[in-house]
Structure formats: structure tokens, C-alpha cells
Amino acid sequence: MAIKSDEISNLIKQRIKDFDVPVLSADVGIVTEIGDGIAQIYGLRNARSLELLEFKGGVRGMALNLEEDAVGAVILGPYEEIREGDEVRTTGGVVQVPVGEALIGRVVNALGEPIDGKGPIKSKETAPVEKVAPGVVTRQPVDTPLQTGLKAVDAMTAIGRGQRELIIGDRQTGKTAIALDTIINQKGQDVICIYVAIGQRAATVAQVADVLDQRGALEYTIIVSATASEPAPLWYIAPYAATSMGEYFMNQGKDVLVVY
Image (cartoon, rainbow, N blue to C red; front, side, top):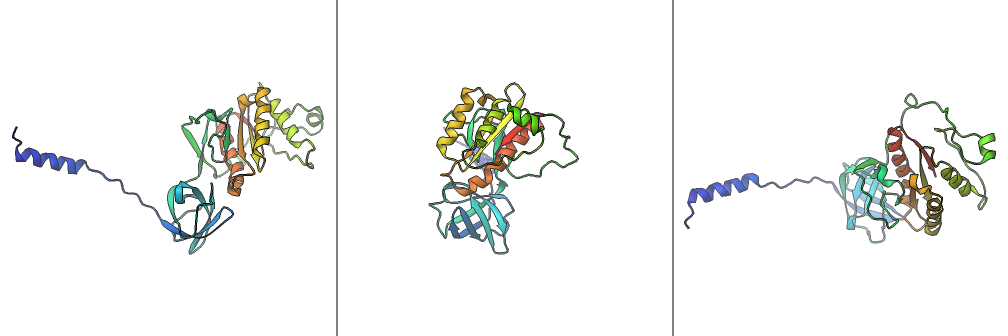
């Protein structure tokens, strides 16, 4: 079958017209110093504060210290394979974590990734770990008590929904027990609880999850874990990630108890 030259010409023109190559723009820098999860990077002149960076092997980082010729960044993942001279790229985005109902009942790391073996988290929404806190004018007065279930605490040092409370004590004096009892006591109170474990052993976090599960409290609780074996930058980012998760429910009109 003969093909006319004008048909071939029109086909080529249409293919050229439909051909589209996305243009990606990114600053590229070089690692000049690396240690303890902190990297000094030269060349990222247009990097923004708190911007998400991409290191070798897909490891992510966050720009914190912006200098004239260098950027100081925390590495949010394993950094043993990162060496001086490796390339670093900006991404144009910020560090975000998944938020929403899908996280309830799950154990996640500081980046919102599941670590409980229950499969991926099917959340369609994310939130930045760093954002401006609600102003004083937009906050409601503290007028509703948060019952801990401990008579001594509820009678003498009543805690209100919306306030902060510091638990001070030596090791093995029951600080974690008070926090867990408070979470368990929120059953049926329409309160979402977030337990943030920073620098604890993985076995301890597993025990906490088991206790909450046995008492039926995991149904309304999110556990954010940055264990002792993980890089220090994940310890740093864990409370911010948990707060972002809690603020999502706050914006839905729900009360949230966050235990750090």
C-alpha cells in the first residue's frame, strides 16, 4: 500500500507538535562536610529555609542554616553512605507528613511512614512540619477539663483542654504510666491522642503500642516514633511532625491530646 508524502509530512508535524519534554529546574550543590546527621553544602545559592533537599541515593534533608556561600542541612535518614563531594539538589518543596483519619491506630516514624507492618497509609492529605502556629486571637479560652483518670491529678492540678502540662520526675517514677493512663481514659471522650516517642528503644515503643491496643485506646491514637537507633535529626523533627498531625484534627473541630 502506497503512502502519500503529504500524509507522512503531516504525521511528523503532529508528532513534533505533541512532543513535550518537562523542564526541571534545580540548584545543585556539593557536600563539603558531613557528620552526625549534619551536612555543610556549597553551591545551593537559591535554597530556602526549611526547603527539602535530595542527597545521594534518594536520602532527604532539610535546609536550616543559610549562609552566603554554604547551607547547613539536617539529613532525615541514613547518612553513612553520603560522602564529601556528593551532589545535593533542591526540590522546591518543604518537608511534609501525611495527615488525616488514615493515621489513627498506626505507628509511624518522624516522616509519617508506617513502621507497624500494617501496610501503607492511604492518606490523600499532607501538611508541612513547620508552619505558623495559630495566633492568640484565634484561640479559644481554656474552659473544658481533660480528665486523666487519676483522682489526685484531676482534683488538685486539673488540666484543661488547650493547655500544656509538664510531667517532671526521675527515671522509673511512672511518668510514662501517667501519660498512658491519660490516653486510655480518653476512650469515648471524642479526643484524638498522639503519643510521640523520642529517643526510646524500639522495644519500649512496641510495649506502649501493645498496652494501648489491649485497652482499646489504639482506636483513637497515633504513635509517632523516633527511636534511639535512628538519626538525631529525626528526633528533632518528630515533635513537629506530630504537631502537624494534631493540627489537622484541630482544624476539623476536634480535641487532640499530644504526649511528647
